[in-house]
Length: 121
Image: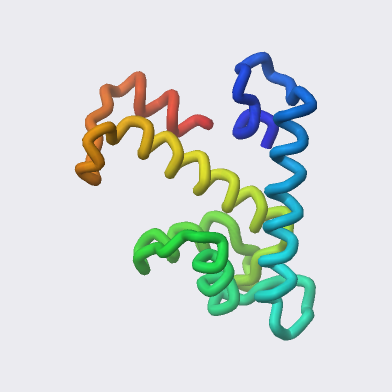
């Protein structure tokens, strides 16, 4: 999470960066609690889909299934830590894409080094 929120690139979170992170975590906690409809402390895959949408991400089935495979536990539930990690990563990926898509065409072109740099975040 530090890497995703470290705008200055110094490997540390300053006060402003930490405040932004804390607000995001609080927002994600609210979304998580709202969508854990059975109050189990984890979210099922159907609950996750609604939670992603509530967080502002409308994802196609392929991307959704990839996220479930990557972030869910073997019983196909997601805990809060993985939920936050997933949303932070999604947010960063969308932010980078929008920055690189200057003409808002919905596509970007990356060379290998750019791809590796962004995919390792």
